[in-house]
Image (cartoon, rainbow, N blue to C red):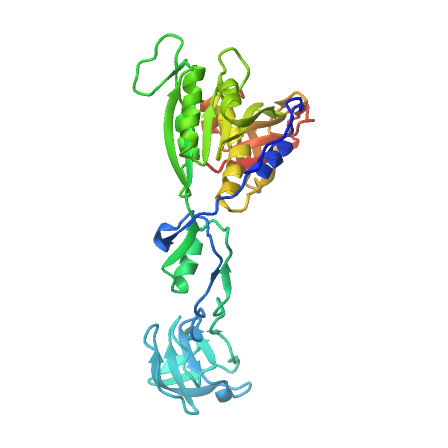
Amino acid sequence: MNDVCYPKTQPMLSVAQAQAAILNAIDSINAQEQIAISQALGRVLAESVYSPIAVPPQNNSAMDGYGFHSADIIENQSFTLSIVGASWAGKPFVGTLAKGQCIRILTGATVPDGVDSVIAQEQVSLINEQVFFPSNTAAYKNIRPAGSDVQQNQLILEAGKTLSAIDLGLLASVGLTEIAVKRRLKIGFFSTGDELTPLGETLAYGQIYDSNRHLLAGLLNHPNYSTTDLGIIKDNQQLLEQTLMNAAKDYDLLISTGGASVGDADFVKQSLDQCGKVNFWKIAIKPGKPLAFGSIGDCYFFGLPGNPVAVFVTFEKFVKPALQKLSGTSVGQAIQLTARCTQRLYKQAGRQEYQRGILSQTAEGELMVELAGGQDSHQLSVASLANCLIVLPAESTGVEAGETVQIELFNC
């Protein structure tokens, strides 16, 4: 496990610097397991896969029509062939064609020996058992060659790929029933703070309900993660230290929210100084700024801010890429689109901001974006209305109505 080596005197890090430092500190897991492909959606492929067969295994027809041999074509003239059988999907024609003969053939049906061309049924006329071909009949058309999708022994999926539904279909198409995947990541998460009340209890004066654990539970709902909600840890340094030391033995990664700053009741820093190698950073990001990252033994740790919108943004920008690398898959880059802003956006230079917006498209196809509402980092109601983040660079001092901005769509 790599060490994190930013000095305590490091000034505010840019988003890119913090992302790079975190990824540099993460080592991918190696353990794997064999599972049925029916259980493999979203899992990370542990070994590259080569196809044991060709797909399709034989030449087959690309459409419903008639199969014939091109030698029977009379150039620039119509001609007639006699039907001597049919090839159906799963019930191939087993005879042989003589000159002047053709077969009825359906989409996906095996093309028999002696047939090198298929004509669509709409292009011909059928009278009794005679097929009348037009003068412009083309040779060698509408046949899918054996192996035209996958060749035998071809590499079809590389190790490290997160398996999609299409990938499962591909694996099934070559006859594989099981696959080697990386084991699930074991992740524990908890909230800190005396002000937090669990759901189902009555709020006392000065208390708020704990939304962060439910937000994190949703963000961590992934086939490759095995998660445990560790509850609310009160502002007690001894309790927090004991929780961290015990949990670090059982998980690959721990995530806390709240207490990552340096206030009198923020005990995450003191606790981690006792039991781990953790850096406390100020990152040039809004919402967010305070972030803790490091390790406790063999367990990685993220201490996220306490405000829920800041939890969402810092998870997307820092935790998600770390989880991807830890899982052994490629780290995805957020896709940015350009949209025209419908209103003035206010911002001070210094931090890269992710404002919550609503993206729409005009009848002409232009992308337009507006703020979803207030931008305070506690306003989950606004984030709920939003469907994108408006990305404003650190040096930006705002955006005038009508100017273009970069946006990132929500993918949660």
